[in-house]
View 1 (cartoon, chains in turn purple, red):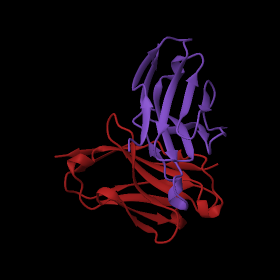
View 2 (cartoon, each protein chain N blue to C red):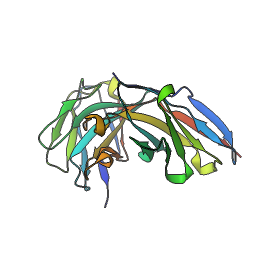
View 3 (cartoon, each protein chain N blue to C red):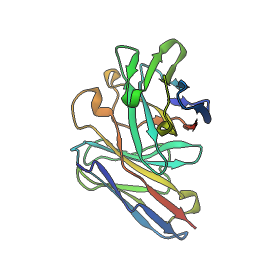
Length: 116
Length: 118
C-alpha cells in the first residue's frame, strides 16, 4: 500500500498561473481533505470531501477549487495563483473502517508550492 | 468554534530527559483529540488519539497523553527522549463520532518545535 500520494512534490508558479495538485489514496477511505501549512500557523483546512460526490469548504477556501474525481482521487486547483498561496499543501484521507478509528486521518508527503 | 492552543512554540530538552508538550482545546462537547508528529520535510504521522474511555492513552514511539476534561488539556509526555524525537508536534481536535461528529476535518494547533540537546 502506498497510502496517500501527492503530485507534484515541488512547484514554482508565477502570479496568475493556474495549476492542479493531485492526491490519491489506496486505503479505500471515504473522506479526503486538503490542508495548507504555513510557518507558525499549523495546518488549516481548505476543502474536504466527506464522501464520493460531495465537497465542502473548510477554514480557508478562497482562491481554491476541488474535485472529487472518484473514491480514490481528490484534486485541488488554483485558478489564478497569488503569492499568498505560497505554502505546503497536504492531502489526507480517513474512513476505511467503521467506528471511531475511521476518523483518523492519514497524510500524504505534501506539495511545496512557491508563487512568485 | 473549536480551537487548539499549543503554548510553547519551541522546547529544548536534553537527550534522556523527560518531555511534556502542552495542548489546550476549546470544544463544546467531548472532543476527539490527536497528537501528530512531523519530521523535517515529511508529512504528518499519528502518534496517538483519544475519543473515550481511559483518559491516559498510549501511542507509538513511547509517547503517552492524558486527557483532563476539567483543564481542557491533552498533554503529550515521554519519559526519556531520543535524538530522533526532534521534530514538530501538532495537537488537533475533531468532532467526536460518539457525539454525532462527522468527517469534516481537524483543527490543528500551531505546533511545538522540539529540539534535543546531546
